Length: 382
Image (tube, rainbow, N blue to C red; front, side, top):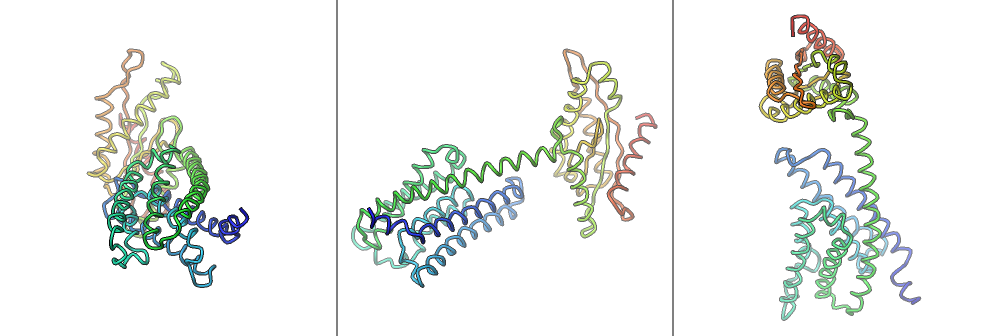
């Protein structure tokens, strides 16, 4: 037992485990950051760029591990081969789950052909060729399952454990073809791999919960609790970013401000709960209309400005194009009235629209101008 601990639980091993956990933390941070920036709706080349970055990150992580082992073992990365292999197997398996793109999957499936001495095809002589390809088929099925069932595996401990065990067993069996070590070492290495992955699994879960908490906090900070649309704080941030972008690119930006006609009467007649329903109804239909027109007339973002007032910022749209979207929203509200306890509530809106001008020095000037146009519209009979 003393020799067992001496060979498999050294201070060097603990350092490597910490470095591996650190690499996996970096992979997780990058993956979640890119996930926020890029979605399935993003342009193809943006998504391809994300996949290339993630694949490069996996390769760099593998190379970092190799360099770590080379450094701590005085130039011989195979001195502590069992831990070296387990670390790389752990990082590659984790990459499939967290990075979860086809390039990473293909890269993982290419690893058995890329590592040294994989280029030496003579090692497949005799029965080893059949043995290798049988293992490779099992590896392929496991990798594809992990890729296709990411969400299930992240919440199911037994599926996660089975997949990682089969994945590691395939890899250790493939390595046996090249090094012909005593089979009992596979059992020992698999035991330590499971411990290794347990540490990583705990780390990943904590990171995922931290990201979930951060996302909840971000939603509370940037979204209106009543209507679910972006709030005034988010409006301030977004408008400043677009204003700065306009200064460098001359991007076309239009702004529409609207409020609900005679909103006070809804509150006074039906109560504040019904008034809240009116606000939610308007926000929902306006958001839906913006989603259907965003590709045709620029991308529009809806914000609750305060009370019954809302603002839409149109990126890549003229004031005329913004006006067309506004009229569509008004028509949708007319076509889909709000019914409360059998009573039909006719909700109408009043709008003001402007576009960003070269003379505008701050976002405050834009909002003051569109607010003035809104009240002019009210004074002109809505």
